[in-house]
View 1 (cartoon, helix red, strand yellow):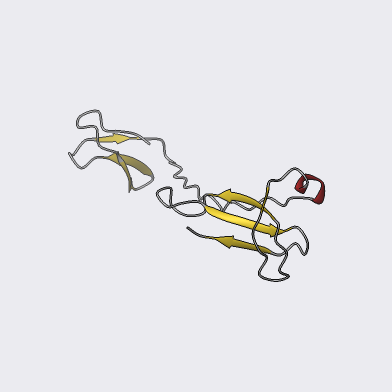
View 2: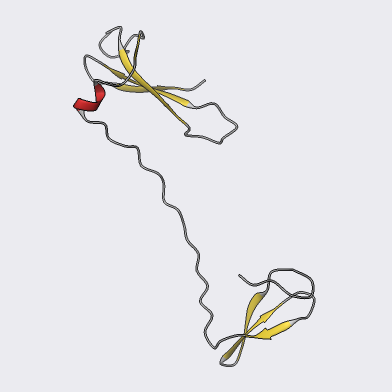
Amino acid sequence: MLFCPDCGSIMSPKEEGKKTLLVCACGYSKVEKEDILIRETVKGAKKLEIVDDKSKKTMPKTQVECTKCGNKEAYYWAQQTRASDEPETQFFECTKCAYRWRKYD
């Protein structure tokens, strides 16, 4: 990304024949290499990590009732799944049947 030396705005590519110019809204232009490569990167969605049975033993537990089997104990963790100004999402996993659910506050 290049900025105009006159006004400081971002310069945009403009093709004229085989050459590519970088032009600014103020009128400044600069001849650049014959090929300008414009790249955009898109970040993929972050995947949730899979937790194996060995590491579950170290996870914290809480007293909450499983809606599937009625067990009164579950592992829990929290993760930011929405905008940063929203509260984090609480995840639970039953220690008996391994049913998972989430709670939004």
